Length: 115
Image 1: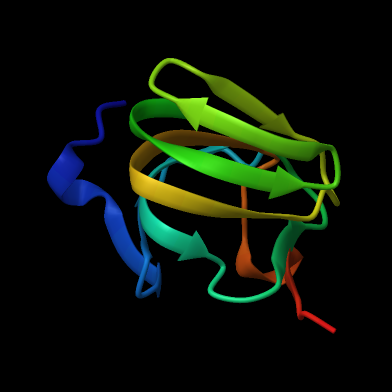
Image 2: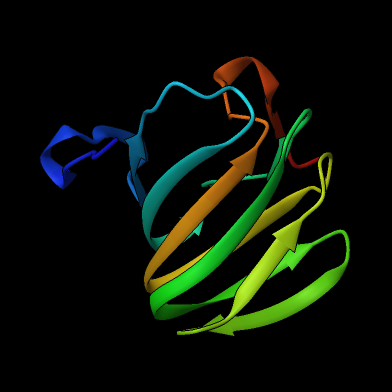
């Protein structure tokens, strides 16, 4: 199955994050490319309740803040998020490939607000 770039589903998750989802018929995994320039989410932390995620940095860099610590990620780096790992990221022209397993859906996304 070939999915062309122009077939990807564009979603603006915030002013600082645009995601291109490549939809294919498999519930075991999902694939997307995200462009993050600034803080995502804008406030609080993001959490996936049901899926693990792999971020592979295509270009740019970011500071990633998670339950596991603070990390600088840059081109060629990979970060593995376990399900329920809360995080936020501050991207500087960051472009990442994202692999989700199982396939990501909005019902499993949780925004944790700052206290």
